[in-house]
Image (cartoon, rainbow, N blue to C red):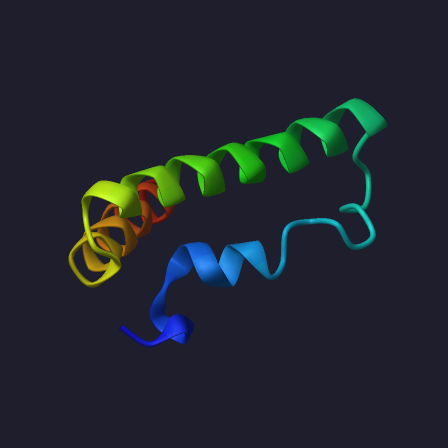
Length: 70
């Protein structure tokens, strides 16, 4: 699978290490940063058991459904 289609690779390249979102407190900034790191850790652990070409489309669909519903 091409790296550009891997959601975890995309996320790892843009982890909110840039300027924080406007209007967030330092505690909120830390919480967002920590959340993205935890998601990455979980994703790469998953990839040790389920190859990215199988897992990535499922994850993309599931996260897409979650985000669309919010």
